[in-house]
Amino acid sequence: MKLFIVADMEGATGIVHRDQLVPEGGEAYRSGCRLLTGDINAVVAGAVAEGVKEVVVSEGHAHMRNVLLEHLHPAARLVCGPARWDQKPLVQVQGLDESFDLAFFVGFHSRAGTPNGLLSHTWVGACVHELRLDGKVVGETALNAAICGAWNVPVGLVAGADDLAREATADLGDAVEAVALKRAFGFNLAECWGPKATGAMLHDAAGRAVRQARAGKLPVWRAAKPCVAELDTHRREMCDRMHRVDGLERIGERTVRATGDDVRDVLGRIWAGLNAALTDEPGWLK
Ligand SMILES: [Zn+2]
Figure 1: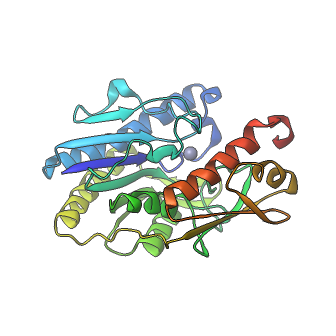
Figure 2: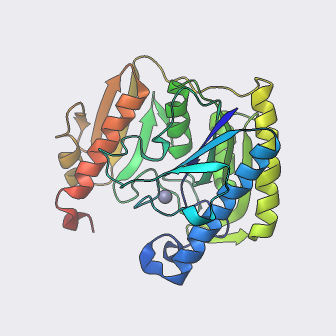
């Protein structure tokens, strides 16, 4: 069995604050990288103990170089590369293909607008007010599940704070292991277990998820054909820049739409638009 681990950072053990998420945070950031790598290693170990033979990790947080390769579990390989949309058009799912049997989401966070959500946002917090896929409001859990589904790969485990775990269960169903590593009290506040406790939770949940996959009990997310993605930006100027990207149609003052038969292409265009919004005169976003 082949496992693909999709990693973000905000949902990792103990992470509650921006200092833990960007290199400028210094020692707090280096600790964040160790905590994230520890979470990944715990699910790798749990999956390997259940007989998984091959594991690939792909990570998509900020500059996308937050997993410590020198500490990575020896059974896993890491997709490494620059955080440019043309290099990683599918962000943290880059590297997946139909040869994989199962995906895990580690370090995930709840979607933009989640009440009292911990570090909640959808893809680019500075730009995205709301994202809808086939009419349903989605966060990165559902978006990435839809991309995995295009390769017929089910999601078996989603780990983050308890608000994220609720979102994962609501969007992906009860068969998926939704692992709550923290209890969210607000955007930067949570009650956290330490890595010794969360490591055991993640290890055991990974084992259960592999068994669910083997039993054929995990659903695959199927986007509609054609599928429709609509994104509302916070401000009109952001939409001005996004809709210049090919394949994005402006349907409102702050809304763009992409449609197509392949959800990977549709969401890839939305991601390209967000990158255009961020890289075109970035000063106006600050
Ligand atoms: Zn992130």
